Image 1 (cartoon, rainbow, N blue to C red):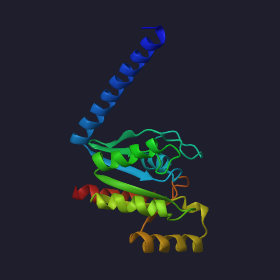
Image 2 (image 1 turned 120 degrees about the vertical axis):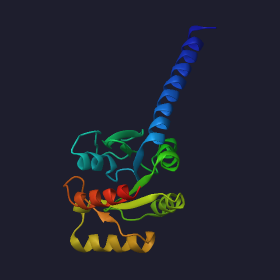
Image 3 (image 1 turned 180 degrees about the vertical axis):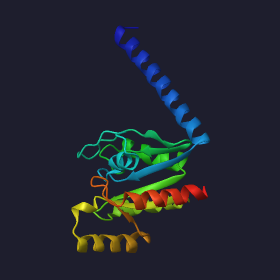
Image 4 (image 1 turned 60 degrees about the horizontal axis):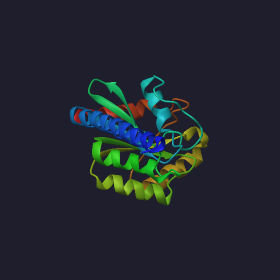
Length: 193
């Protein structure tokens, strides 16, 4: 066995161990805790919303689409976690699949994010329908409303109501607009769970 093969085997073993440890941690948390997952297209502002809702800079935020590539859990309050997930329809499909699989297997409540400047695309409508089929509590969040004027915002909200049959909570995580209403909606669901 040459040195390259030895290093490769060692690397693979270390990777498997790390994966198993992380997987076990998520398993334990998901059985004992309530998990709220943020899911949506790349660059919809999910990470920034976590920071804005909690008032803590839990996660790095970049304007570059696809910045979040892993699932991260943050404790909102005792027993309640919020999960930041990679964007759907990432260039790297395996990254997007992480988000979908996590929501399906671990999430109790889903915040489905849309970017106000984009509206509802075919991909988002399909993703929304798949999440709806899971039967989980869901809130549609329209983020980045500060990029639109009043009439544009009205049009995008109407499109969402027509396409998704849901009224979104309109926010701007960047400018702290609408966060109180989103927080109230989350709390109302938590009180029932």
